[in-house]
Length: 191
Image (tube, rainbow, N blue to C red):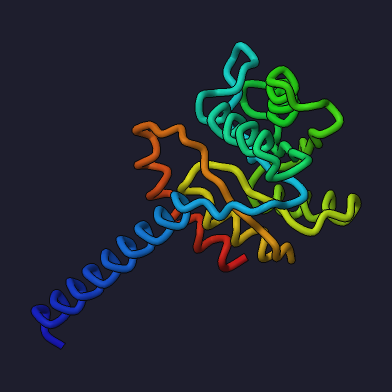
């Protein structure tokens, strides 16, 4: 094969990969921005950074505020807060519960999962909580770009009745996060 032919094949491969990447980004963005709301047993809010002062970051607060809004509209009775201990030293789930209780959700309606170090662990832990409590349906609440991969994680652990809602908080970092999700999605797909 000639050098010219090899270059042409490589160019076609690059174009195909770029098209695949672009279509995937459009699909996960569309999926994430189109909430699938439905009355369910509980919401699960995925963790994120806690600031050095012990308060939720703006991104995490956006997720929690979405949960509060939907809770007040009676979409679910319980809220599962899932996260781990971040590099700042705070248990994200505990901080999340404190925020929700301060905002008026009853303490006994918020369930803590402090072992949700990633989306897959959150899905596994949520399934255990659902089985223990007899829950049949769940609503995922996270950033828009994270919805598709989180739904995939829940599907992989055998949770089938899943709704979703995205936080309204947006920032420039979301561009990086959307690109990252392309690779993270396929990592989860191959798990």
